[in-house]
Image (cartoon, rainbow, N blue to C red; front, side):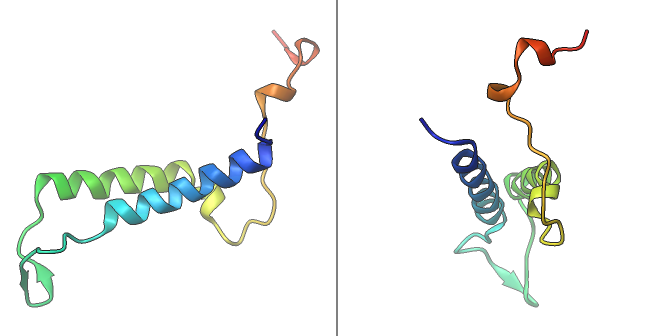
Length: 83
């Protein structure tokens, strides 16, 4: 069984890799004055998706935060439920 720590590392790495993948410039994109001529709708959507992932994982991606409060449903029992 995968541990909670392994799951957190895997999720963190996925988020960082996905942001990088979504923000990569197309290989054959035309340049004018150092910038892309225009951004396609797909490219804009990719950047928006990358930003959404960044916002969702902002606490995890902040290098100034040493500790995080992580709650796992596997460790929450029936006695912990408060109606």
